[in-house]
Length: 117
Image 1 (tube, rainbow, N blue to C red):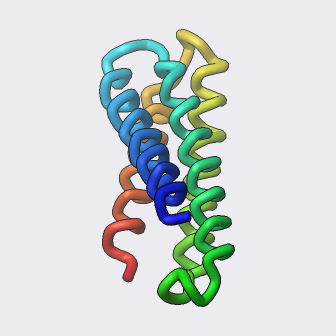
Image 2 (image 1 turned 45 degrees about the vertical axis):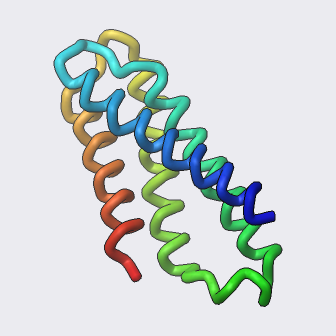
């Protein structure tokens, strides 16, 4: 079970890296790269699966989950995913503020993951 959990941790990190890198790379273009929306959706799915696996581990998992942190991260991740999908659907007519909000919320989500203990 630990191996499966680690696979989804890797997918979660890779998805957020795709969102972060794609957002930075598309700041100077007119559109947001499609990979950003795919990465955001992949990060949400991988994160939900990680929480499910951790919940299934129960007392053998090594501790209680911080549901407040998970809830905050889920709300931010869903906001990133929705904004990224909206930006990709706009095509070449994406405002710089929309792209920056995707990048900013991605950074906030990473900061919450790292510093909320």
